[in-house]
Amino acid sequence: MATIDGMAKSETTAIRKKRLLHQARYRGCLEGDILMGRFADHYLEGFDETQLDHFEALLAEPDQDVLAWVSGRMVVPAEHNNDVFLKLITFDVANS
Image (cartoon, rainbow, N blue to C red; front, side):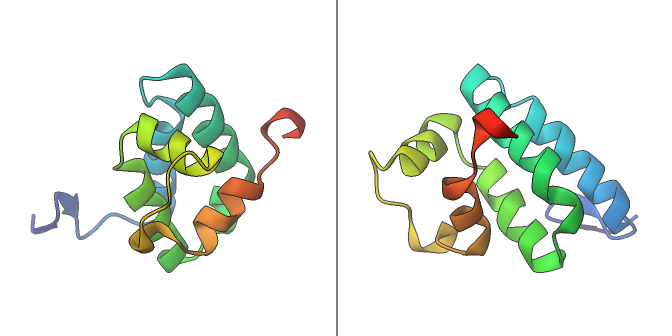
C-alpha cells in the first residue's frame, strides 16, 4: 500500500479523525493530554481536511512547545498560526 508521510493513502477521513483523537488524548504529558484531548473532543468532528492538516501538524510538535505557544511564553511559529491554533488558544478547557 502506498503511503504519504507514513499515512496510508486509503485512510478515510473518519479513520484519520479517530487516529488524531487518540494522539490528542495520549501525548505523554498530562497537561498536553488534557488540553489537546478536550480540544479534539470539542472540535475535531467538525474539522475539514485543511483543519485536520493543521491539527495534525500541531500534534507533531512537542507538548512543551505547544503549551508555551498557547500560554504566550513563546511566539507561535508562522506555520502554526492558523484558524485551528486560534481556536486552541481561545478554547476553555475548564468548561469543555
